[in-house]
Image 1: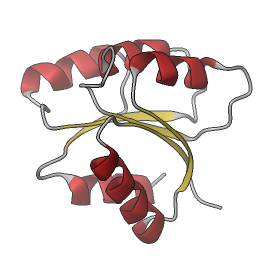
Image 2: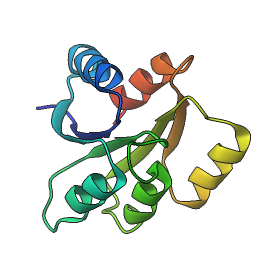
Image 3: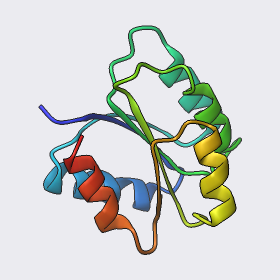
Image 4: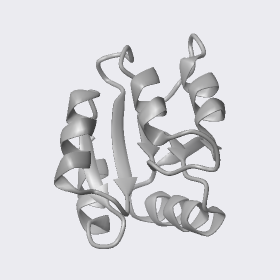
Length: 121
């Protein structure tokens, strides 16, 4: 059984490709997805929700990934939250760190680093 992973990404093509890649290369178990901040906050905030890793994009159909990150601040110590975004600038990385994110990866050039991160969890 792999990492129980929840993915917050509003682009269906990116989301489906990401899940397929991580299932094949890392062996994740995709336990759910969301396209909006509200969906993600509701799912991640439920008591007893079983997840090990949340992968969050910052720009969503509704709301923002930053709101999702805020909702994850009181997660269990073993639960990891990472950001996967096309906007992984220095300022965004700093803001994500302030919100307690475990790692930030750029969609365009850090997929290998994301895979390596998942393999070490």
